[in-house]
Image 1 (cartoon, helix red, strand yellow):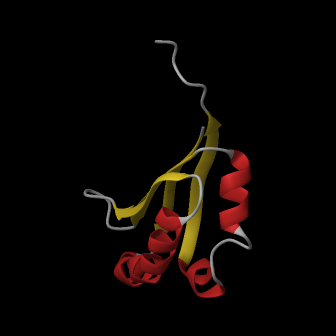
Image 2: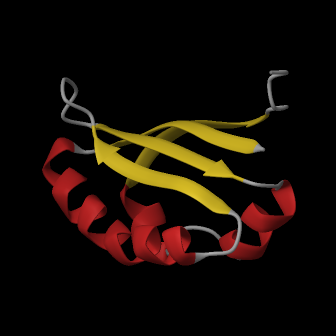
Length: 93
């Protein structure tokens, strides 16, 4: 399993606009083969922060979905990003 987690920083006045551009992406991701969870959400404390959380069955699944990444419109709004990928093995029962 692959987990993608972290956060993006945008200008506070652009956060709602950025999130609006993510609705279609979240819907597409959740329908994509291998997607177990996909969320792009406003942070409850920091008005410039957008939290990212994704769970995928495999790296191949996330790469097949991701394609070229965020749109130019989205990239223009991102001030900084701290997102990492983590490979997770199932726990022994």
